[in-house]
Image (tube, rainbow, N blue to C red):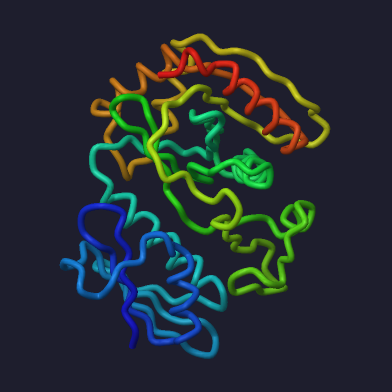
Length: 276
């Protein structure tokens, strides 16, 4: 039985797993946050037992059985939530983001809106990533990265030139792959101010449509896009209000992630003198 511990700040999260290859996969999912077993007592314990068909995940309050790579996906999700819950004092936005000229550009939206595609486009353009699904927003309107492997559609990954067969735990029967963006520019290591926030929507044949939003609409949207792992709306409100009043706020529809990512980078660069 192997124990893997992760820590962003505060208590660690420990995953106990018996399969050696599965243990390596779990460690790779959040490799930035791996700590030694000598760290302080963990906040959460996740126990995994594997078998020929998949395995069983045990947490404090439940036991679930999964088949094949669904087990790794379940462990990633549980570890992701547990790690986010240890980052106190931050609002958590459902967003991806990258650093442009020293400031953050964020893409906000639900699953399937194109956040990860924009993150991949920024990554391939050599920009440090802030996140691909969750962003940590501080009280001063600045952001820090939350680093993890990206879960990405297999066909879109191929369109970006990724050799999907060499990705973590590749399974040809599963549509999504895990991609490690730590190579190249990798993850942002510094806290940066936010210069632009775009609510994004990928839609086939949409072309590129961009419109500006008023601060009041932006604030309402930001409140709606908070993850419940971070500060509650009342605690997050000051940072969100600051962000809505100072950053460039946009609604973006697109069908080409590379084009949209480049436009948002230009907006972020142009807003450099007006960042939060």
